[in-house]
Length: 424
Image (tube, rainbow, N blue to C red; front, top):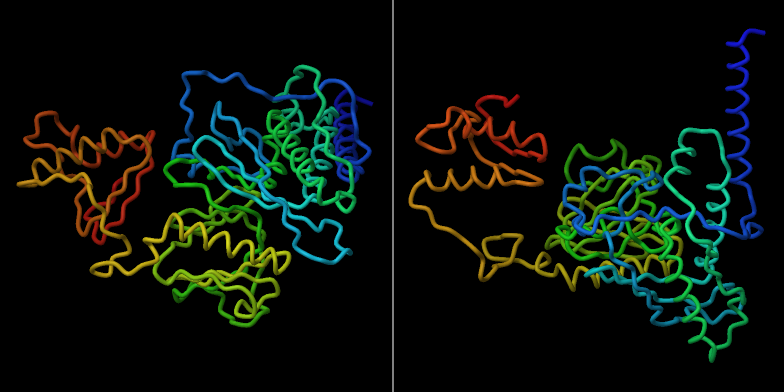
């Protein structure tokens, strides 16, 4: 056998072993995976002079939720955890997790709440143990090798222990102790970057790549939902059929902000649709959704149907969205002067111009200073217009030349009714 044939056989065998190992890991019972010794950690030493915030331009570079090197959190800011209250949502004894814990999390100026049962803590813990085992096995694939190279051995420390007492065995007078145990578990877990950055932890905390971008506003409720296709009020955007057979359900990550909702594709991180909060914005739960455990969100352009795991889950989503919008975006729900979507703003910075010369000079300076985006909307616009006159620097201040210079580092958008010449 030649050396080339031996190499091909060896490569084929390694690929088969890698596939078998991946299948074995996926089928492991993670409750048996307890290790002693060092933990893998991907804690990175950050430059103290680096900016803490996440730039707005990050919305154009979203990645799949399971991809490595996804920036979720603000640099140098810890996450503080408080388990505020325990709610017993049912009187039956057949439910394994009869209590719901309200968890308040704070990250820099962002504060939000999530509700989780004890079984959700158990599922997260088992998934992290499985991930811990998987990352320590040297599977000969490029993706896994890169993942292993991004982590390093740190000090020997144990993964936080989850209280093992069954939820049904915890008495009412011991709930304060139980809350403290779960609070300590999450606090210690979020100090370990290997587990903090894991996509399962992200879903448990209700955070995404868009959660802590300051220019997107305060953080609202987030989570994985099932979204039904269709519902657009604009002709041509819906499926040709109107029956239930034409509907398609897709798994999406829903993000709620003060003036809009959006959902993302978990596998690619792409933003699929943005639904604005307007004067027709409303939320309905129950029979009006035509879906079991459904939630319907309406505005002027679409009727979005979501499907939840239970009626209580749908109620939690509906109440959470309603409370957040009423607190942070209620101005968009009202009728305003001249039919505008925006309320009157006081103490707004403004500048008056006598002629267009000063105005165009300020616009040129603003575009030259742009760091992230340039938006242009106009009825009629020539790309060859000189923004500063008289012309003393050649074509330096011509509109198309400015945009070409800034296109290297800035996103450019235009909405023009009539464009005289295409900008190359």
